[in-house]
Length: 199
Length: 265
Image 1: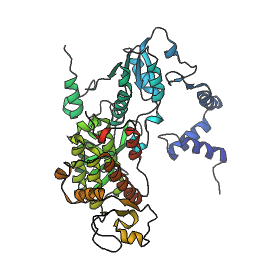
Image 2 (image 1 turned 60 degrees about the horizontal axis):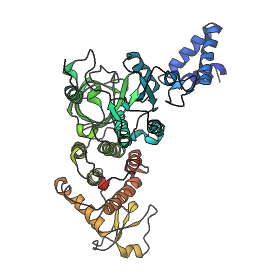
Image 3 (image 1 turned 60 degrees about the vertical axis):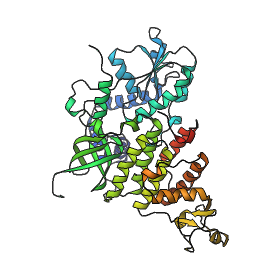
Image 4 (image 1 turned 90 degrees about the vertical axis):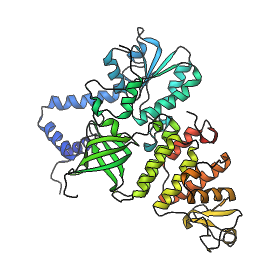
């Protein structure tokens, strides 16, 4: 016997497919929406629809965008000799918030992970090599995460880019602001010492 | 111990995946508790005190609290970080292979101290080895022995006759080498009974019976390396009934061919 009506069940099922949302949270959200004003619920559904209809990947840097090439790639004020390589679109936002980098980006959409079966062919690496080969790029900044997967990706890229004779740099690794030396692991600390700078 | 809220163990991180907002789910291999799965809360935040200590392949001392579902890491302190593994793509890829193989061979919560010691040793060797493929073969043979799958390399697995110094055959499903007489007598193996050269058999026997210090001095030709890898791969795939993802990755890495798998930096 089905106690809850079909539309309710359906939304619960859809919501519980989202990351971090279990069946309990999904039912709570569903019953919240059931009681919420119609406009609010429709605004949500419209936002989701627009997200899927209007967002594509930039044909140059593979960041998410409404228009391709994306605003960052079209911006004439940016330094067109540098490409910063990141794993995810969210990393672009994080770097942009620093206002410290003014070049172009390239989003790989993941990192090499042998355990998950993600190899170089599953990432936007061929596209990056093509961009770099056109000759106007003088520096590639490897800004993948300082995890083993990110390091593996950076090392792989370094190997692929080396024959092109351009400057290849890696984001510095060291101590986080507000961190504590006592709790730093030895690799981070060793790199912090190696990368120390004159004051 | 089962009633204690906190317990302490050393462990090596075999696998980790993102979990929730900023947490990581870790698969640890410990000397006394075997393979366990724990949560490292907040380990993805840059200011986390744990993140650097719970990276893959790190050997660390853990303080773990029993949770309702999964246990939770409360403290972690690195014992050995295996830095040279992390700074070389090929070494790191072999470490992935080593960890994936162990993960597939052991069940949760089954203690096997010699296997832990082997894992610790092999991560150390991979950081310095000049022949990574040889180190991997040595590890495979030891792992098979310690987990009860030691291949029989000295007697024919069918007729028990001592193996003669000629070309023999390797039969994964029979767990070892088959002599030419049994092979010609029609013994078959659905899982790829193939010829094994005398040299390859000699190397496997040597690896199975000698310490790493002696084995690491062997010098093998690229052709012999390929044959040994193929034999071991067939046997391991037969036991696990699946292909390992890190093997496929090692192959893609090798496409710009690396002489004898030795990596310069």
